[in-house]
Image 1 (tube, rainbow, N blue to C red):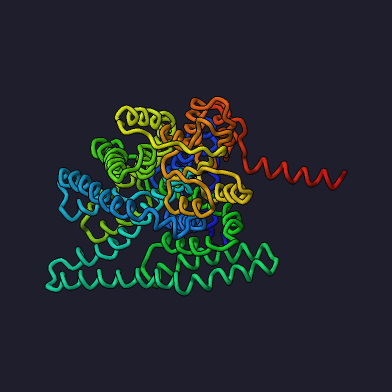
Image 2 (cartoon, one colour):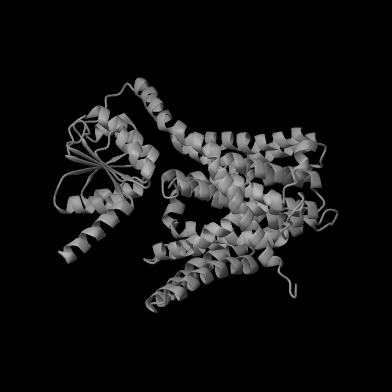
Length: 549
């Protein structure tokens, strides 16, 4: 050919084979992620046939990570991030310590040096951004308490890995130098200054400039220009953060999205980047598969299985125990632990750095890649099993707590309408009902949202609405209507079932995001289920019919 077409060939091979394998996975009723990973193996350098450019694939995958984290930032406010800091910061650090220790033990057992074993353990301790967010988004969990904790946990992990990537060369690259300790302290100080400088820049300067730019473009009336502006901001801030402040692309994109998420154009920006996010996320999974050499499964089955066990079992058990220790119920603990039961992009970077510094054997990199591919493959299955388990686990937990409670229950409220959840949807409902002077009781487990409901004039019960004792305290026995405004279908289904058992005459109106959730809520006893897409279509059709009449 007259010119180099490696970029086009990589995109065509990656997306084309991913489509075929994803369609096959869908046909077999398994996660499409499995098909994308297999596609990467097929076009990778370790299998015969088409061979795509691995380096280009990894760079394209990095674009996917940037766009995905930007999209999450659009829906994740600073208030949400700070609300989970008390569990995300200590929890993530403790979980990293446990996973690193387990990985280090395996490395020492295989005869590796201590420093190589530490790098190996660190690589096993950090979860994949793409896998975690895709799992949460597929189940509408990003904006729930479970999702906020998982994303906050992920951000802390990313910050720790940024620190590790800068300190490792200072620690192991200066061995034998007399100034090694001084160099290490200097590197740590530089990292701290850069991170603080990045955060200050984003919240002092970018917080004023970026929304102004986006609003200016929006008023131009050009959809093409608006889409281009969103992409330029996401990619530009991510690249600038990495080049100037030495933080990861993902963190830079997340902060850019979080700042724009405070504007009224956040939803439109999310919609404009969605197609590209999906396409490049697929290339991420393909790139993981391209790095995998299937021979390692045959040559080292024992170490591979042990590595996968550390990632899937060791990390999950540690995360579950930590979340429970902070007082959260089993559903939240299970969601967070399953979300983190995989490894991804940072693991590859750490493995490459370790091999480059000659502290990690190449065998360690092969085990990390094998563990990544297998854990990503298993993660959707684990998530599905966790969701099914959570439907009944909270009911059993409530019964056990009820048996152990000897103190009399608080006097129930007597409002006719009970509202569960005072978030984006619930707050609008509450303002309409309280604005008409009607009595309203709100059940909310987030203190800031509970305070907002109190200011609006509602009677507020702070607690978990899936518990029968909280429902009775809210006066569900005598209430006429129950409104469920929380976005998570699993918890909503449990609430519907318990509320219906307490008060058979209760009118229950719930919120859903999919046809499956609608069917589940109706089956459990909901009288009316509102799905945003259906209601929007109905209202628009009504308006059209009035015009035609």
